[in-house]
Amino acid sequence: MRRQYLLASAAAIALAAPAFAAEPPPYVPPPAPIFTWTGLYIGGQIGGAWGRDPTVVSGFVPPILFFSGFNNNPSGVIGGAHIGYNLQINQWVAGIEGTVDGTSLSRTSIDPFTAMAVRTREQVQGSVRGRLGIAFDRVLIYGTGGAAFTGIDNDYFDTTGFVTGFPGTLERVSRTRSGWTAGGGLEYALTDAWSIGAEYRYSDFGHYVDYPFAFFVPLGGLFAVQHHLTEHQVQFRFSYKFVTSPFAPVAAKY
Image (cartoon, rainbow, N blue to C red; front, top):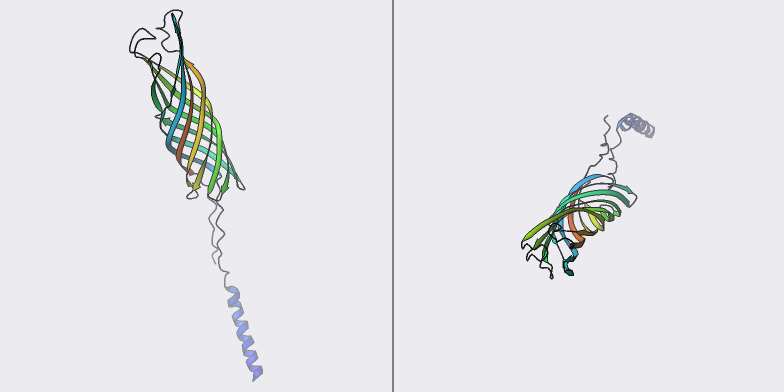
């Protein structure tokens, strides 16, 4: 009896074996790809800027030789667009970025000696910078620095006629300045493509001299205004990274 039972059990196992062998293994999806900051990105930024433009007025209007000065501290809104590329190696992220901003940075001040009104306005600003940072998964802390460019309008209004001899004379001097900029920021990746952040930068556009009212200053006279514009800016940023999608996993069909 026992022998018949054992033979029946062996036969049942033998019949079931092909069925077990025919079952496919369960599908195990591949692990999700690790987030990376590597890639080309574009975006926008908006914030505020404030500057310092110590202004020195000097001249010789026969027979008077004079020197005067005042601090012109323009401020305003600054915002625009950026484009860049990052390369991440382990935790380190290196990249390059270019920006262009429109600004309302302006201020009008009065020279205490000549009573001349001077209005300084920055209308556009740009930069080309390197970036180097360290990533903690979706958080990026970085420093940045490079070249900066700006367009500056200086309006000179001779309210009393002291310089030109004609009260109310107005002249605008426009110029493009280059300099350097440096700062740092923080970014957080909301998704593989979208990130937000904040950035601070300091810019120095160097010394330059304007010679307004050259036509009006009497022969043998000289009138010059020296500027040195430096600027702080804080901006909120948002960026879109062009993600190179990995191949989607394909489940085997049986």
